[in-house]
Amino acid sequence: MEWIISVVQLGPLSEWVSSVISGAAVITALVFSKKSDRRAEDQRLHSVFSWCERVSETNSSSQWILVVSNQTQYPIVEWSAAIKWISPDTGAKVVETVDSEAGVIPPGRSEFPWKPSKPVGASDAAVSVDLGFRDGNGSYYFRRK
Image (tube, rainbow, N blue to C red; front, side, top):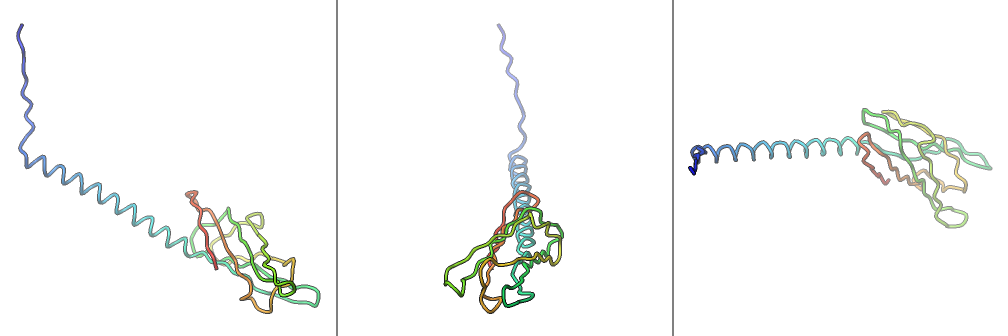
């Protein structure tokens, strides 16, 4: 019985070290590239704002619009807005919602009619809007006024 032992030449240590360092550099570059992409996406999605404006008022009721400013280049399809204020009549907090059933939010300024169920204070500043929406990647974002 004869044993055959083969010798594998692994090369000099300097080539091994340089290949490990090159591999680490590639991985580091990919990680930082992905982080940069995420930061740019977060910055883009921070360009979505919402607020309410009073458009008319009569003795019996007032007409308002929910304004959403989408400063991104993509439409927002799935969204929900919680409109909150303190009723001047009762002093109770009132919350109403408007959601994507009202329509898609294209890039730019969009207006959605809203009629409050209870009286609102004298100024637009009395009303706050919390906007939540899902981006094209499926991530959910929340903006509070």
